[in-house]
Length: 56
View (cartoon, rainbow, N blue to C red):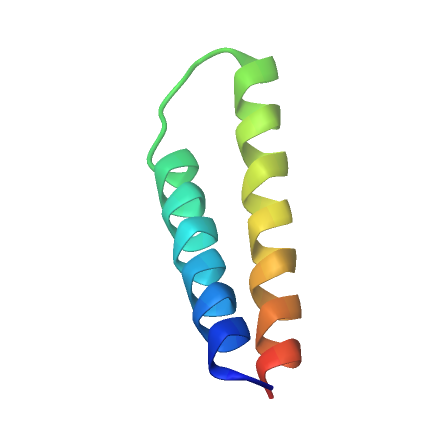
């Protein structure tokens, strides 16, 4: 894997981790907003795991 691709994957990993954190700290009493945030967190965790496998 070339250096440019590794840099792009690391940058993507940082962006995904930041989004996961932002949605994890979001507080809401609306069940639809909470369900959306939970879905985003799950998607971020999936992408983080996939990126780890790609970079191995």
